[in-house]
Structures are given as structure tokens and as C-alpha cells.
Length: 472
Image 1: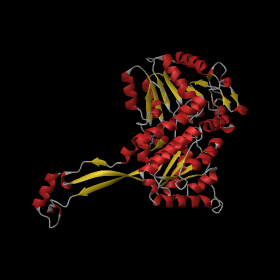
Image 2: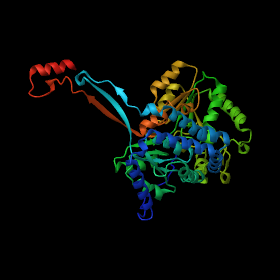
Image 3: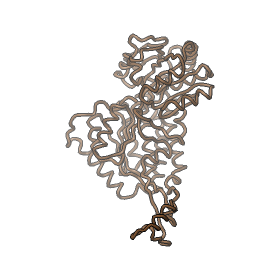
Image 4: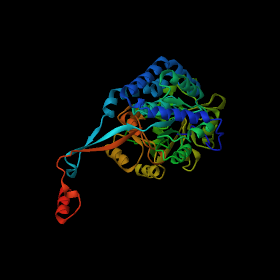
């Protein structure tokens, strides 16, 4: 993911942002009161989120349209409906998640029982990203609430309308003593990062992810980093080409390509690329029309700076489809680039936009080597009917998540954790995985006073040692 906060550095006047320090202190004090640990309190806050989304669906859609040109369907699929489904799933399973989790006890500890007791961490930080500016703040918040925490929220300043809406709505629906929204840019974020949070959750780019991690290290604060990277897409000759192209178009050009798990580039065997390109062109026309700039379903780039960044990737590149840029409209046409140089910006940087490089390789083994020579991606896609190739790719590559024969449909399954590996992030969330991220699983062993064998007590002798070895 590209960074949601740029160049967090420099000195912040302590008096100017003292209110952030005070807000954290109040949150921590409220957490220590124990109110947030109650099951019914958690349920009430989750229901309030659902109520907020239901009652202000139009406002949310309008904010997303303002920030990113999102159409109603995309806003529902990836933000509004997603949040409602996450709340529903969490409410259904929360009581079970909160229960102690029994584990076995060794013979030496008998009679006794062992279990894991989930407990909240405290006051946590959630920093959202601009590409899905509502979902990427509220979804981690759902997880934090389910685990019983207080939270300070920092929406992205690049998605101004959505940030302002979150800051307006949350105090109207949630317990104001437990949650605070901080708007602003690098200065506010710098001050936020000075607080001794129990956990920091950041969605964005690698550069700022390192800054968040360094700040967290000052307080030994654990972090969850949802970053990004260049997610590869393997397309085998032995695939359903029409369906493959349809699904690639959907996954790549949703939100104008500004999706951390969008296919970043395609790997295809030499000789099959022209068939694939033709199929993708056909499906692009089907989904967005011949003139994409007139499609009400196609989004816009978040700002002119990112539009210029993406346009620069196309300079002197072998564009085989698209390429039109309207800077003032923050519009870039869905674009296909065939075999760009591997050391070019479009193949070195996470694209995070509507540009799709297609790289031809002599074999899928060569594609595997290319993927493995680069940092581990957040996602990977495999399109094939060949189960042997599917297993080979799964076995010989690494990625945060993988989807076979589709785009990022793993995102709709709350039973699957979402998170990166290596440079694409650390930690995970969604469903129970989010509950566990914002919880401490406290180890507990309870022993009986009965049968207190003295073999572990001094004075020691050979017989006691022999018996202990036998018990193992």
C-alpha cells in the first residue's frame, strides 16, 4: 500500500498538540475502569457501528465519491457492506471468542487444568489508509472493540471527506470515553505516535510502516503492519480464459487500481500473452465501456500528486492498451504495459493504480524465480486448471494470502486471516484473527491441593529423578 501519511518527521510543538496527550490519558483511565471488558458493552458498541452505517449509508457513499470517485456498488462491496458483514460475524461469535480456551496439561501437572484466557490489551492505536478510507479504519476498530479495548483512531488526511465524516459520526454513536478520532497530517500523527499505546495497528506503505514501528519501539508497543507490495498474478495457458480475464479486470481496476491486494503484474508464458491481452481488452470494454472516462463505475485517483506519480510510470513504456491521463480530472485509463524493463519504476514500485504490466516468461518455473527474487507480496493469484501447477506455485512461493482462479475473494471470508509476510506486513486480522490481534491470551494453570507428590521437592535423590524422567 502507498503511505497514508507522508514524511512524518520534525518537531511538534508540545503545547499545540497537548490535547492529544490528554485524550490518550483519558482513554487509558477509562480502560482501567474496566467498563470495556464487559460483554454487553462490547455488543452495544458493535451494534452502534452497524446502526451508524445503516443510518448514514448515503453520507458514507458521498464521502467516498468525493475522495475517490467510488460508485455506489464499489462503496457497498468494499466498504459499507463489508463493515456490516464484519459486525454481523463478530456479534455471532464474540461470546465464544471471549471464553477460556482449554488446552491439555502434562502428567506431571495432574490433577490440574490449563487454559488460555483472552483479555484486552488496553488503549490501542489504529491508523487508516486513504484507498479504502472508511473500511480500513472501522474494520480494525470492530476487532479492537470485540477484544474490549479503548482506541485512538487516525483516518488518512488524504481522504479528507471520509476522515471528516468519521470524526463527526463516531462521537454520535460510540462511547466517547472509549474512542477518540484525531484528524490531521504529519504533525498530529507524530504526536499520536508518542503515546504509549498497548498496540499500534497501521495500514499503509512500507516507509511510514517503519516510522510507526520505530515509534512503537520506544514504548515496546507491539505492532500490526498491513502494508502491500507487488502482488503477482500467474496465468497458465490451461485456464478458462474468458472467466480469468473477467476476474482480473474486476480485481485490478476496482477503485481505479488503488487496492493493496490488486494484481500488480501478470506472469504468462511466452506465446500466450496476446490471447490474454485480447481477452482482458474485451472484458474491460464490457465492464467499463469503450470510453472508460465516461463510466460511472470507474473511480478516480485520490489526488493530482498520485496521478502524476502513476503517469510517470508510463514514460517510454511499451503501452499496448490505454495510457490516457487527465491530470485535472485525476483520471488514468486502464492501461496494459507489455514486458516493461524489470528495473523500471513500474516493476520496482508498488503501482497502486490502474496500470497492469504483463511479463512473459519462458516457463512457470522462471516466473517462480522472478517472484522469489523480490520481497514477499501481500497477495498472489493463480489462474489454472492444472492442479499440479497450482500446488507447485503454492509450495514454492510465499505471500500473505493466495487466491486460486479469482481475485481477492479471500477478503470476504471472515474465517481467513488477512495480513502480510516479510515486507508486505506483519500480524493479521478479520474475524477471530482480529479479536486475537487485539487480545492477550493469558496462560492459566489451576492445580488441585490433592496428591501433592514430593518428587519435585528437595532433598533430591536418584529415585526421584528416575520417576520424573518416567513422567515425561
